[in-house]
Length: 96
Image 1: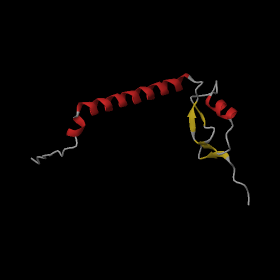
Image 2: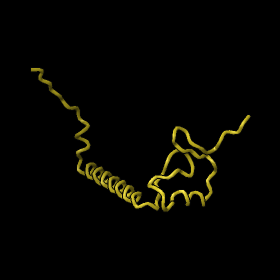
Image 3: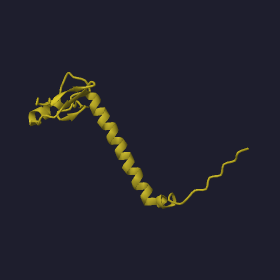
Image 4: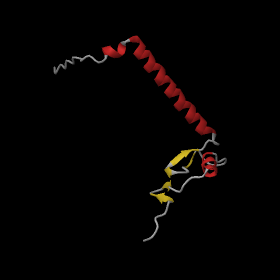
């Protein structure tokens, strides 16, 4: 029985199931001269290239959105409005 390949490409999406080493992990996330997305060191698909400035913008936007979500969830829980939203709402539809 032939061994299955542990890395390759299916439908244009890369995969790699070889055991990652520390050097391969570090070199895969930091590739100067490459685009924003690079192949993952382990698993299926792509990951961010931290040597590209666009990746840092993506991380900053994601962090800002996460911060905004946690702040708004904390404010809604503190004001007590979360309990009022659990009550049923009556909807009237007029078919005129």
